[in-house]
Amino acid sequence: MLIRLLRGQLRTYQRPLLAVVLLQFVGTMASLYLPSLNADIIDQGVARGDTDYIVRTGGWMLLVSLIQIVCSIAAVYLGARIAMGFGRDVRATLFGHVNRFSAREVARFGAPSLITRNTNDVQQVQMLVLMSCTMLVAAPIMSVGGVFMALREDIGLSWLMLVSVPVLAITLGAIIRRMVPGFRLMQTRIDTVNRVLREQITGIRVVRAFVREPYETDRFAAANADLTATALRTGRLLALIFPVVMLVLNVSSVAVLWFGAQRVDANAIQVGALTAFLQYLMQILMAVMMATFMLMMVPRAAVCAERIVEVLDTDSSVAPSTAPVTELSSRAELELRGVRFQYPGAVEPVLRDISFRATPGTTTAIIGSTGAGKTTLLSLIPRLVDVTGGAVLVDGVDVRDLAPDELWRRIGLVPQRPYLFTGTVASNLRYGNPDATDEELWTALEIAQARDFVAQMPGGLDAPIAQGGSTVSGGQRQRLAIARALVRKPEIYLFDDSFSALDLGTDARLRAALRPVTAQSAVVIVAQRVSTIVDADQIIVLENGGVVGVGRHAQLLETCPTYAEIVASQQTTEVPA
Image (cartoon, one colour):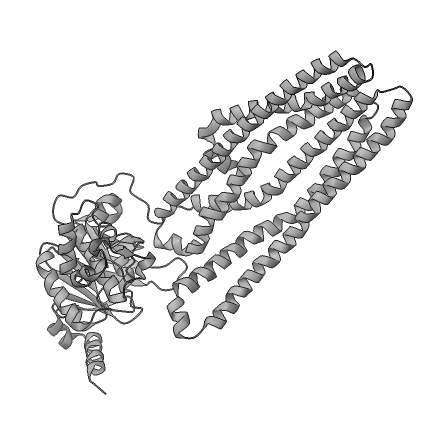
C-alpha cells in the first residue's frame, strides 16, 4: 500500500526527485573523497614535512567540502518541497474523495478516524518522503562507495566490515520488527482519543447538564492511558536503537585501531590510510544506521498508508451516473415510487413501499413516531443515501441518473441538526448562493423570522459565528439555516424537523411568510409537531417504515388511527397540569 501510494502521488515530482538523487550522489561522493585526501595529507605531507603539498591538498579539501555543502543544501531544499507538495496533494485527494462519500461511508469510518487519516496519517507518510529524500537516497551510495574506498585503502582490514555491518543491521532489524505492531496499534489508539475528545467537546452541554465531568474525565484518561502505554512500549524499543548503534560504532573503532596498529607496525599500511579506513568504516556504519532509521519509519508510514488507501479505495455507495442528465426541462416535481431502503446487514428494511408526489406549489408533510424513518426518507431525495428499491424521481428523472450538481442546485435542505460554519452571518447565508446581495440576505432573514436578532448582533450581517453556531441559540440556529435555504431559491424545499426549536408563535409567522416565497416550489416538511403541518396539502403518516395514512388533516383524523393518536397525545400535553 505504501509503495502504491507513493508511486501514485509522486508521479508529478519525477524531475525534482531525479535532481535530488543527482545532488545526493555528488554530495555523497564528495564526502567519500575527503578521507582519502586527508590520508594523503598525513602520509604525503605531514610525514614528509611537505608544506606545499599540505596547502594544495587542503585547498582541494576545501573545494570538495564546498561542493558537498552546496549539494546537501540543495538536496534538502528540493526534498522538503517534494515532501510538502506530496502531503498537500494527498490531503487534497483524501478530502475530495471523502466529500463524495454518502452518509453510509462516513458512518462506517467515523469522523474522528477520517480526521486522523487526513492529518496524522498523511503527516507520517510525508515525513517518510522527506527523510527518504535527505537520508535514504544517500545511504546506499555511501555504503557502496564507502566499501570501495575502504578496500582501496587496505584489503587486510576488510573482514572487520564483514563483521560489524551485518551485526548492526541484524540487531537493528530485530528491534524494528518488534516495533511494527506497536506503530499499528498507536494509530488506532490515536483514533480512540480523537473520538472521545470530539464527543466530549461536541456534547459539553450534555456533560455539564448531567454533571458527568468526572465520568468523562475518567473515560478520556483511560483512552489517553492506552495511547501512552502503547507509545511507551514502542518508545522503549526505539530507545534501544541509538545505544546499539553507538556500541557497534565504538567496538568497530577499537577493533580497527587495534588490528590496524599491528599492520602499521608491520609496515603493511600507513597511518594516513589507517585513519581513512576508520573514517570509511564509520561512514558505512552511519549509512547502515540511516537506512535502519528509515526502516524504522517505514512500518508506521506503511500502517498510515494502509489507512489512507483504505479510504481512497472505498467507493461511495452513491455513485454518479456514467451518462448523467445535466438539465431538466421544467420546474421540479418530486415523486417517490415504491421506495424501499434497507441498511447493509439489517434484517428488516427501514422504509418499504413509499409512494407519493410533491408538485410545485404544494406542501407535503411527513409525520410519524420516533424511528418511523422520516429523516431517512428525506435523505433519499438529495441522495445522501441511495434507495435499495424503487425510485426517487425529480421531473420524471431518477435522481440516480441526474448529475449531482443539477440535483443539488434544485434542492434547499434544512437538516434536522442545523450546522453553521465558522465565519459571519453573511458567509453562512451565502453558502446557499455565493452571489447573493445584502438585500437578498436581509429578505431571507426577514422571512425566516431572524432579521430582528441579526440586526441586534454587533456587525449585523458581519457578526461572527463560531463553529457549529455555538454563539447563537438553537432556535436562532434553525432560523439561520432556513434563511440559508431561502437564499438559494431552490425548486424543492426539504425541511427536516426544522421548526422544532421555535415557539408556536414564531413557527406560525414563519410558515405564513414562507407561503408566498414557496408558491412555485415543492415543499416537503418532516415534523413532530402537528401544528406545523396542519395546513399541508397532503400529510403522509409513517409507522414502522410504511405508509399508514395519506391525506389532509381533517381527513386523517377520521381515517388514520395513528395520526389521530399523535394529534390526541399532543393536545393532551398542551393542556396545563
